[in-house]
Length: 134
Image (tube, rainbow, N blue to C red; front, side):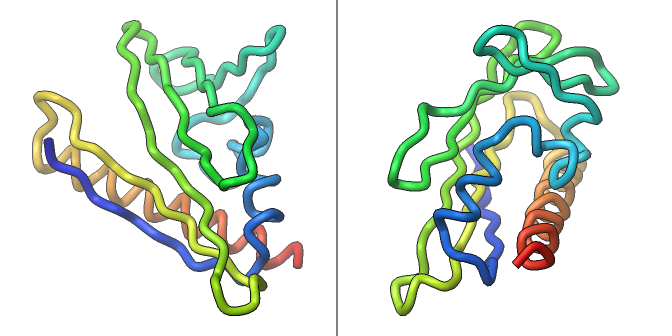
């Protein structure tokens, strides 16, 4: 399995980055490539994509910055996405967000590169949104 670790350093404390990113309702603002609308149904979150409605389920809220989530595609396929917010060890005023992008079975080099570019753009947007708020 091929994977890439994509990162963004954000000049905001890790707890602020985590609090924002863990809210599925914020996804369209910083990850518009995933989808444009987010709906909550009970305790489940759904995102409207070009391919149809998908489900996004984050790990339970935690103090460690773990934002791992599972994405259930329209086809029913489930993709596990490791995502972390790591506090800067020096003074805690900044943080690193680490997204592990994994190549899906049968994915071409071109599709993997396209996914990598999309995730990098989303992380850059997350940085921009959070630093602008600060």
